Length: 80
Image 1 (cartoon, rainbow, N blue to C red):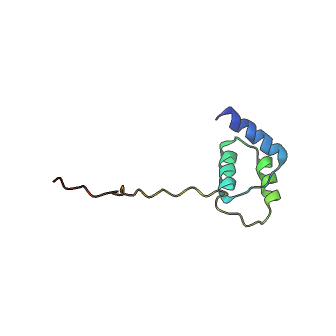
Image 2 (cartoon, one colour):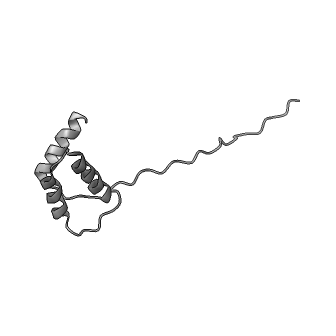
Image 3 (cartoon, helix red, strand yellow):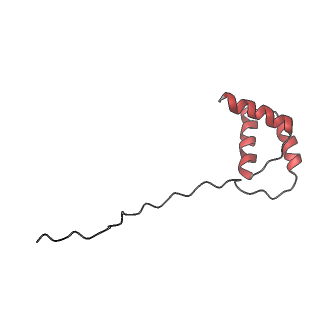
């Protein structure tokens, strides 16, 4: 785990911010199972979120861009 992420978790647990998405709730449940956060931290966030209907993701992943064939700009000129 990176140092920045560890400090972010510590900061987030102090602020008692509610979950913002279903994906975030799943991630923190995983961290709870792994023992990286306490049960009290997870329950506090869960209580503060309440019965809100959360989006699957806060910022949906960008879809894969379609690759297109290069356009031809001009026909080849016949040599005289």
